[in-house]
Amino acid sequence: MKLKFKALIVAIGLASIALTTGCATAMPLGLINTMITTPVTVGNGEIKWERTGEASCYSLLGLFAWGDSSINAACKESNIHRVGWVSTRVHNVLGIYGVYTTIVYGQAE
Image 1: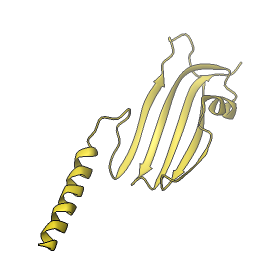
Image 2: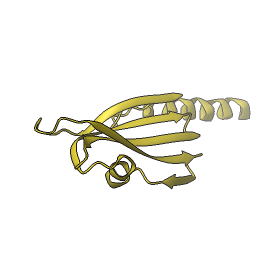
Image 3: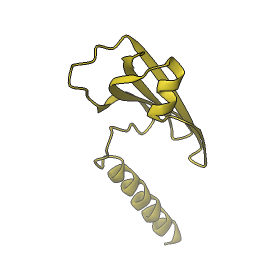
């Protein structure tokens, strides 16, 4: 009887994990690996980009996070003064290690 109860608990746990991984999120997430690029903002077409700047932050085990992936940091990295548009790139492996990068397209002065 105890073995059946444990098997039932494990089955319910696995089913709940399987069901919650398909929930809608702000960005597509893969259970094993995520490698996507998504838009953040779009310009009006007046600024033709000549430079790109990137700024990243990192996550380890979902417990530690560090870095600066702000738009300002990406602009400073490439000396961008006029922003055309911004996108973001996410690479996450098993939720163990993640890199989140903001990419700014724009012009210098």
